[in-house]
Length: 127
Image (tube, rainbow, N blue to C red; front, side):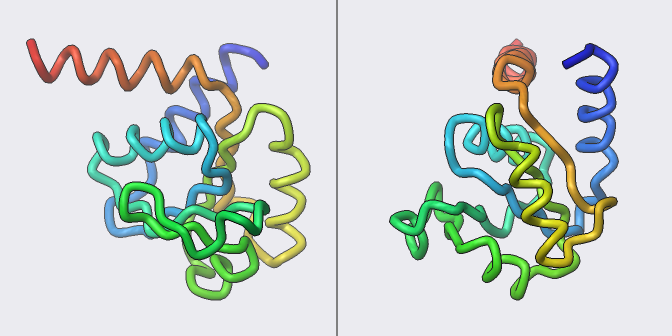
């Protein structure tokens, strides 16, 4: 993972328009960080998508966790942020197979990047 793609990811996230629905695919640690990052960026996360069926129907910080196919049904035009360090390729392919446009998929597979950005933002806000 090169620095260049991380910078690219950051720009893609910044370029999401404020009125666009965002679905975070992956409700693990990176997903939670991405959600915080979006909150600080004042962008609206409408749902998490997750392949773990135990989580379907539950909520994380008032955001519902849905089966990926269900999320795509409800939010076909959303931006899908794939938040996983290990399975991001498979998850991206899964979204493509259930007809999400490649341009609407952003890969976020670097936990430290988000941790750093969120902490920096929080510290700046306090200062």
